[in-house]
Image (cartoon, rainbow, N blue to C red; front, side, top):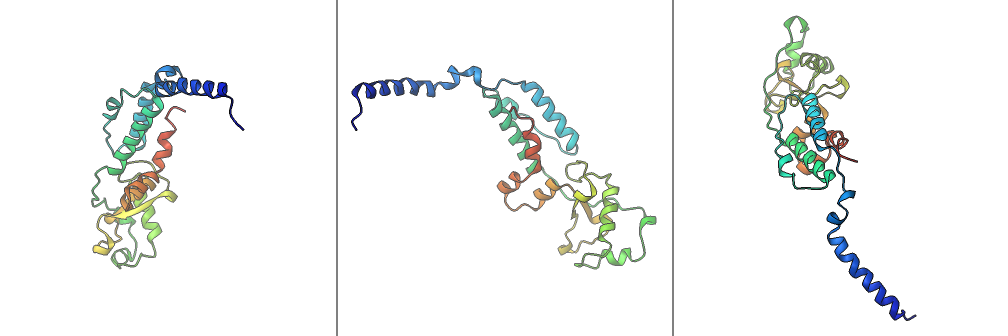
Length: 204
């Protein structure tokens, strides 16, 4: 079936009109781009990070770097991604922890502490006491964690002669545990719960 010449001409004219409209869509339809309260977003973001990760400090210079971005959703997403990257790459050095008061130690504690590489039979009790010692907080970022969500690492790795004694036990949250054990930064960053938590603040 042959197309009518008039139809072809009209279709061509319509396409010709739409091309510049697409190219300059941001200017033409600027009213349709998100124009939410960026100041409120930044305030909420900073308060969230300070409240939930008090042991970390963050650089918010990304806010100034994205000042020319007109779409607030894109701007907020870029800011969130930058903060998540800072969380992932935050410099953290494992250090020896405080001991538990000696009166809370029990018979066989010393022996089981250095029976490497076997995990001691009283490991759950040790983890709980180390969690209480640290006031239920992650050693890396400072977030509050429930005992059942607690992960552990060691100031000196067990494979390198470290023990299961309290001074060597480090308490971590899920995200910090992922960071410390991640072999692939891209996958590690994508798997962080922090992604979902912060994206809730981005304009919908």
